[in-house]
Image 1 (cartoon, helix red, strand yellow):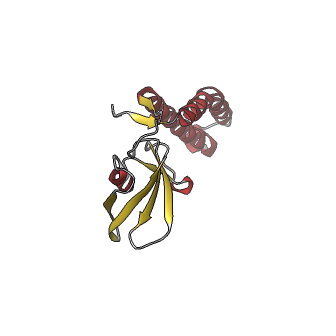
Image 2: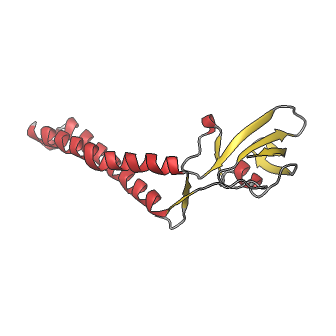
Image 3: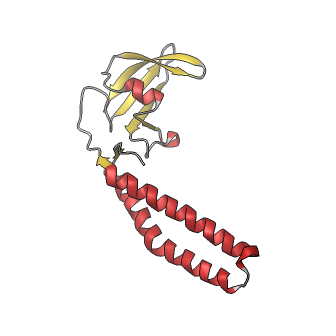
Length: 155
């Protein structure tokens, strides 16, 4: 994998640690039991249950490896109130020519979730906002062309 740090909030770090613990203990045991049962059904070359259990095992091991890697390189974001946009900031922006104000939280890429208005600091919008101050304008490119925004608030 990469040696690049993953930035996480304490809550997300704990959530991923909990998922990893579950996968390493409970899930692995369930999969082992499913494999044992599938083997008992006979010829494994044409045994759909066995192949399905093996695929699930591989997917679970991949997820465990990914979580291990993320948690080993994770840096906990402890946002300190700041004049400029940084990881952990809650930013209010306004598109040029519109009255609507949109609010986003700037998070690490593993936490990004547009439905919760959490955007990665590595996304085009997140990257364009980084280090900007209240009142600053910025431009970023979208599939529909360049968009101009103004920072109207930072928490």
